Structure formats: C-alpha cells, structure tokens
Length: 395
Image (spheres, rainbow, N blue to C red):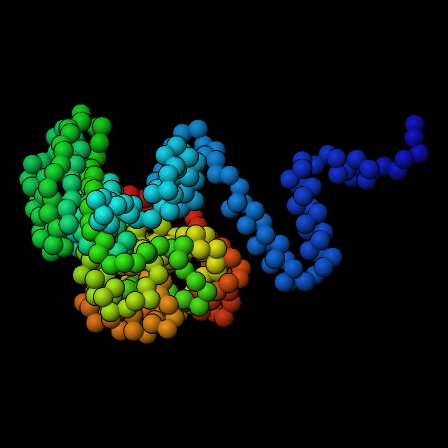
C-alpha cells in the first residue's frame, strides 16, 4: 500500500518524460504564449517556426512519387531541391528560373523545356498543342529573351485518333505563327494502349537576350511594386469544369496566350522591371512565395486589388479553392521599381493581353520570406505554399 493519492494524471516528475520531444516542445511554446499573452510575440513565434522549417535541408519523405510532386507546390519544390538540384547543381541551374541564361560565343541565350500532360486534351479556349507552344514561349519571354526556336516531342498512345493529332499539330503551328517562332526539330514515340493518356507533349525553346539586364525573383527590393497582367485563375477553372466531373457550368475559357509581345512592350518602355514570372502551376500565390524566399523579403498584397473574374471566383468558392493558387496560362506577375510602377501599369493596359492589369501589392522588408494578404475584411493572413495542387494536370 502507499499513501500516494489516487489520480488519473501521471506524477508531475514523470509527466514530461512520457511525452515525445515534439510534444514537449509544443507544450512549452503553448505555455510561453499563455504566459506572455502578447499577440506580437505569438506572431513572431509562428514566423520563426516557418523560417526554421524553410531553412531545413529539403528531404523527400515519401517512398514513391505522388500527384502532389507534380503540382507546383511544396511537394514539387522539395522534389526539385532534394533530388534534381542536389544531383545536377551548378550556377546556371541554381536560380531555378523559368529558363536558364547561358552564353554562347558572346551572345546571351535563354534555354527552357517543359512537358504537357493536360487533361482533357481539348478545352474551351485551346488544347494541349497551343498550350505547349504558348507555355514555352512565355517561359523564355519572362526571362527577358526574344523566343526564336522550339522543339516538340510527342508521346502517343496506341489507338489515338489521327484526326485529333492533326488538330493538335495545326493548333501548334497557328500558335507558333502568332508568337513569331518556329518549331524546328522534334521526336515521336508510341506506347502501348493503356500506357499513356492519348498524347503528351514535351517542348524546348531557345531565345536571345538582347537587353543588358538581369531579371530574376532574387532581384526584388523593398518598395518595389507587384503587378499582374490580368484576371487570374481562368485556365485552371476552365480545365476543371471541362473534365465534367462537377455539375457546374460557367462561361469561362482558358487564357492561354503568348506573352512575348506584351513583355517586349514592357521591357522597351520601362527600365525598372526586376523580375517576371508567368503564373502557371501553383498560381500567383506560388510565384509570390518564390519572390519572398529568393529575395529574402516580405510580399504584401491586397485581396481587393487582385483581378478575378466573377465566374472564376464563384466556381472557386463552390470548389473550395482559392483563386490565388489556380493556374493561368496567359498572365504574368511583374516586380517593378516603385518609381516606374504607374508607367508599367499604363504599358500593360495598352496591350490587348494586359487591358485588365493591376498593381496588387508591394515588397517590404519584414517579415522576410513571408507573403501577407490584406483581406477584404480588413485582416491579414499568411499565404503559404500548398503541399500539392487542388487542380492536377492543368498543363
């Protein structure tokens, strides 16, 4: 027998030891928050934990590839950094921009590659063919290059209709003509029925960088303005509705388009452009996080300033997704010196593809590495990277 009182709780001297280390750490942080009762201190604690997590060495925890690894969010970023960048690391690859900038016999050249597995292959506003051409052209253009030549590789499934292939190829030729580029080489492979999904396309593109400037998200500086060239989320929502899996109808078409002429106008008239990205997988939110991390700055955007079509916003609400994370295929995000922000906006709005351009926010110093959204309700929330993508296979 013992005189120890009967209790459902473990003795105090043993309670802490029975918890795993991460639980003890969480309890300690909770006690610190409760004792302090200071909102600023709690916010600082959260930001510190996010910063420590981001600085940790990337590691793929899954044993097998999942759909999230191709969605453009945290899982994709981890896969790229932990597997590909770790194996292929070199100064040309490390910036992880949309295109590599290389020197060839004194000329500055941009090189990019991309693969397209969109489902369905045909959708309102386009198909996998013009999507492949426009996406490759845009990756070159946002890097400051004038796109010139493309390659096209096709992986076709046995039984795929020749009529559909001809339709795709015709749309590629039309898109290339519109963008002022040529498809000069390619490859074709056929796999057994059931081993693909009709048609996949891989492209590569080459362009010449004629201006003596270096663009990149790491160039962002506090005070810079953030612009978007038009309404966001059109492409991703179009693809989701085109799949017919949801009983929703909306008058939305993909925004797929070549941005090189728009970008040429911007760069020729505005000298303070720091960086550009086309908002594809992961949407505008992912690009803003890449800016914040690469430049070690804070990104502050205003929800009401971000252009979103009523149909896209409504469909997104029904789907339970945020338009900030939905892919575009004909929209760019630009970081511009604040002194030239109004001029940049004027130039964008003077082009058919930028008529609804907007200044959506600015770059700040603190807290570094974080994207903050000023909501329509007057609050502020952190816009972090998603692990995956709510809309897979949109490009």
